[in-house]
Length: 537
Image (cartoon, rainbow, N blue to C red; front, side, top):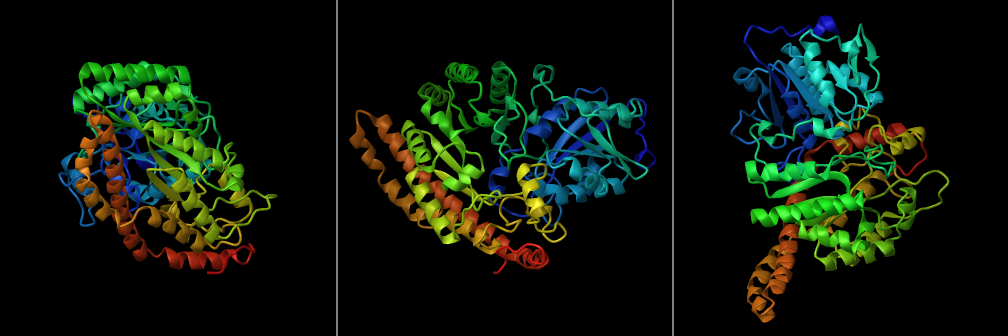
């Protein structure tokens, strides 16, 4: 390994460049539109920490938010050959936080290795079972766990100033043998790192800025990759991120990436009050989205403080409206209770984005069977009753390192990777044999039908009709504010749903061109020899 990549040498007075790349999605999907106006927080955070190293310049290239001002290939992707000519990178970091982008990550790793540029990769995809695969596909060093301290030490190692064997939390090849150094303890002293610097992201146009305070999640859902006891930064640090982005970039739209906003209730309310006071002093108004548990709808004080702070969009993991599936996921709410809580949020004035998983596989020993048609009916009824503003219905994905993946592997239900590869691991494709009586094709078509019913072309006409209804606002005088809020919310629903129809229409067109159906047929033939599940088309 050391002979293969060598060490970087420094000419007198010359600075080195680290380029961190967020790989492109394999194809247009339901995330593509929002990806063009935001970026991932992790790579920016790590890049900002690395920038503190003497003699190094750092930049981030987000291939999903890459404007035409930068060099592009005929396929519309960043032209890394031209980037190397304009500003040669001496070291490249690759973000492996999304499993579906791993094939592109390997393509980039091989590209830079062919040009003698060392490569580092990290992210949640690289659990122990995938490390060897990465090292065999152009990656020189894999970072295991959080990267701020590790990357700074790796910069020294690639200059020959620190033995890689002494760096905790990495993996590399030594004579074709995978070497795992001791694990690094999770970070907790967040104040020792600078605030994320989004000016490092080149050729991007960011409108929605990701910020965060909490790492880890104590819910331990079997399908989720985020694990570990929550670790909190000070609320003042999160407040500083908002203030800095507003004052330097004019940012007004934010997404708090914490997996569960509202953990540590007292400090959350204190943060909301700080944020409210800052906006009043600055005479501005932020629009903020958070991920939060549905049971927080019972906390009137928390909800009020959130609304006053500009937190008006909530992303909630409902997962399923089917009680048996909720039990399998270890969710402690009943469908009827979820509807009641959702209506409380609606009445409070929040915009709620409901996130669902269709066709969750039951654990062994649970006697439950439901045809796709009945599942669709349950989903549609629930979504309407819960008064959700937007919805997202994805399929369960056996992501690396999760308990769900372990369970499905033991049952030999996951389709072979050489046929259904990592590029399909985005929640839009069936990746395993579902529970009887559903087939993989029915499972995928069902998620399309649910979202297709919610996002419809007819909303284009509703938009025009609602604009004509605008004069009715004056009937709300002297409470014009109440009339405006009611009118705007309905109008926003219609615009969003028509926009969702456009997005789905484009995604379906891209899906038809994909060879997935042929690959799925071959994968089912292979598994049909060992698994007596619902494999007929």
